[in-house]
Image 1 (cartoon, rainbow, N blue to C red):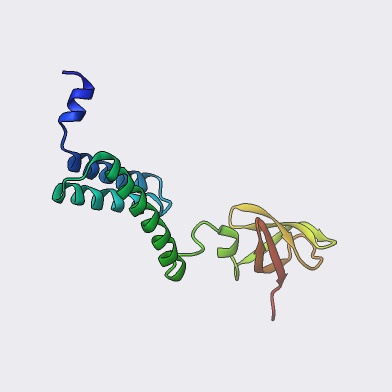
Image 2 (image 1 turned 90 degrees about the horizontal axis):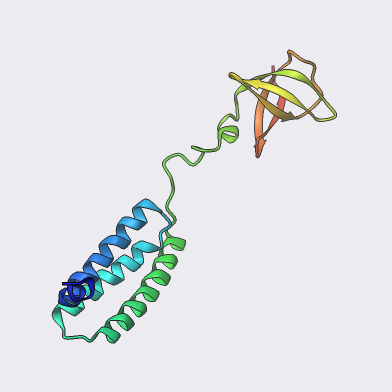
Length: 152
């Protein structure tokens, strides 16, 4: 028995359910909120094929239409109900450091210099300051910290 014979003997609804499962697993491996909608379309197609005698060309058409509807409906839903992470600053170390105190290690002259935050050095922008001056982080622009004098 060759591969083609094995595929022909496979019930179509099992194939659609398997495709749905593979797409759902792919969504977990490569998150993008796209494949999950197609997985749903494949699962619905599998259920329809199980309940009704549908030919293969019509199965493909049903899957394509359900995929389009599901993807656009899903995108519209996510636009209205965005997924908010538990910690929006998780991978934004500079923005997370706002309010921290830093020490100037390379004089800030003409608005730019270097500061020490914890055990690392960062580019900094702010008012002129001599090495050793303690400043407060008030913002971040990419990987450049925006610093200002500490109010007394």
